[in-house]
Length: 228
Image 1 (cartoon, helix red, strand yellow):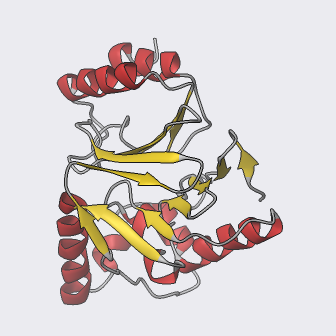
Image 2 (image 1 turned 180 degrees about the vertical axis):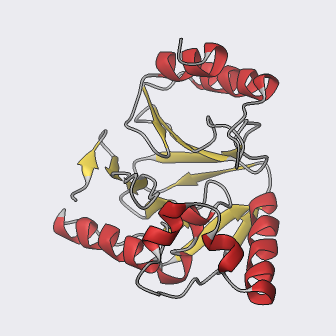
């Protein structure tokens, strides 16, 4: 797969359902290059980097993690540069790492057949801690482009980080609009809070973790009223 260009500064390496691989976003600045999420495995990360190279872009300096789920973090040991996560995500990763170390990977492979598909060749599950931890929000001027990284209340997990590429009016959502694992139920109060957050930002494009970029109107409609 190749990178798809979403806006002046933003590209995306597309999601894949078969191995539960999310979109991996690339934000190009004059000083730094930022990636959103680390991928489901080292193989996923390396394929993403090959697409970056093919597009003639530099490897990332920073990788921001949207939440602790495995398909977004298990490539962290293979990333170029530093990783950033919020304090809740950092704790969840620490807990997941400890459980893997204490219990092995059988419980993890039981989560979903798509995880078993990603790891069917016997590659090792490696959980790495973030290099930097933040609370609330942070702003990065990556050169010609300002990026706001912030925590938000959302129905998918309680550790959601969103990334706003301000000049491009792009909002990268991770999986925050979805329901809670494993039954995918949606807390409607949290869905409404997230809809308000998105409405206030007023992005031109929203990028979910496992779907194509959509308008804010479609995202908000889905959060407030479901798929009706």
